Length: 464
Image (cartoon, rainbow, N blue to C red):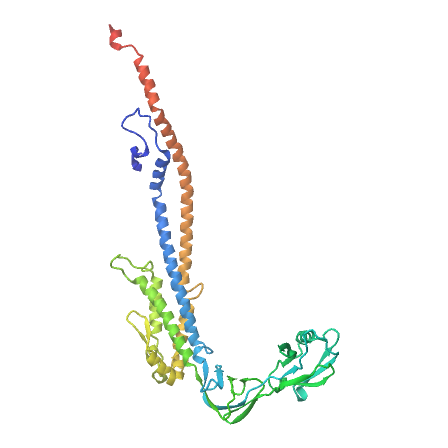
């Protein structure tokens, strides 16, 4: 028992006298023995805790790496930020515009003569929505020419009130919307075409209902000129007049001209490049932090000895320094104002980037995508990131898988150890329970022995 390092006095056994009758605290004795025997298990648990911390760090860096991959993909995407076009109006009060990547850069002069209008009718007032109307039929023509359509609205016993007419018209998808408008004179039926412009112009061609209808607005097309070319549009949202450009007409002041400028969307491009820089810095800073040594605590990150992470760091630093040839001097990140610090992080010179995007946009786009001087920066970097972030073969995903397997192995070992300790605990309880019983019976045994010794005849007396 001495090898266990157990202090019997501390466990309730008074060793100062053999007749004290003190037993032992079996639970404490067994706990101390098991605690000493659990030293190998504690090593396994320490390894598991280290792996857990390493897994958390790897997962965090891997998440940032995937975010970086997304930002690089946005820069290499031939329909992404570097392909985006914008359309800017010189007078938003007259028109605004948007452009798709298919739009052609250029400047256009636009005059708006009139906006597209929506045709509508209103009825003479009646006393209430439930007032009975004469039965009959209202016939409307929508549009004109060969594309015109005819709508017959019955006014019969089921709908010969304004309430009934509104329900019938709106429930039957007739190409117009009905509503009730009330004023001091009573309630009126309002009819509004669902289509703007001349194609939705309403005209009452017959009416035997007795409900008089008045035309409020004609349906007219918007009328404008683009670079002197007359354009007619059924809607105030004009598409197709300029390829890839949508015009939104807002007003038609006579004689006013608007300058519309269509070109590369430098705002989106700037944001995409800044987003890439932020994502890259997030990854490289996290990696640097794992290798940084804290002289106060004399420790580094939990991944400081990770060779795979060191390899990833080297790859990223190499990729971000990639250059192409030619391209009017726009050959690397530094040439557009993205500079690298000594720790590998990037910073953006906003003025230099703005100048590059404003005056040399195609060169900037070529830098990131494909050029005659070689594979573009984003395409090259994106290829590496695709491999680095592969769900099964990516450098960090491989480590995470290995980490998880090792943790599972340690868990199995700890579970097996605990099973053995449970059996060991029962054996120890049985053993030390017997010792406890013996120690508690010791005074009685000694008393019996002393009694028996005292009953023996005195040897000196018997010899006489």
